[in-house]
Image 1 (tube, rainbow over the protein chains, first blue to last red):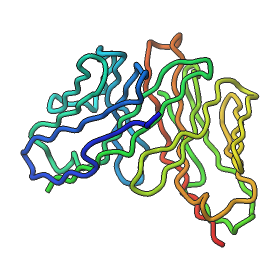
Image 2: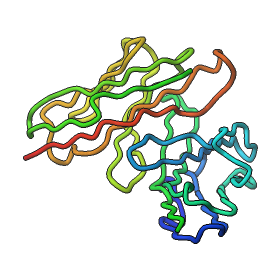
Image 3: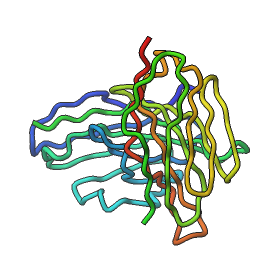
Image 4: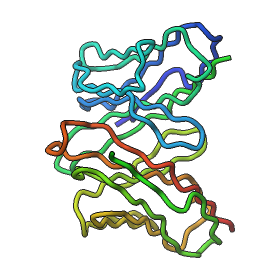
Length: 115
Length: 115
């Protein structure tokens, strides 16, 4: 169990540019989530995948945001035409249902700063 | 609307001084209540999942309890290394108001333990 891996850990971009974050979930986890967290707040849900299917999206996920999970393994979150309000930490999490219940593990996050 | 409120917002303890953090929630059917620890600049670290009122779980100096309206995270004889933000989150039941897998987080309690 190597944990949830996110890349890059930090990204500084100019307003209007596109950015992409990658998440590698814990192997054998079929559920994958993206969250966004700003300073002093709890994480806010963005989207959820079960295997390769994107089953749930938040209203926070504007049309500038797109997430994919090809082949049900790693996932990418792309933000197009970034705005200063997109500056936040983007968190990926994964889980599976087992006899212990539902344990959702987070990665270390990808910090985005839009200048 | 599903909601999580954590109190206090910040708590300063002396090493060895036990205390409790509160998480009040309103949700239309609870599937699970989650506690996480978050260190500055890092992703949330999973601590516990509680599923039904009366359930308790322990890990080292931490003990989480659950009622129908709130959860407590009891910290016994804390050490400076317990300093962190503690986040509470709920996941709504599948059978109430539609399917969702998202976690709804509170804003956290910032705990500082002084030696």
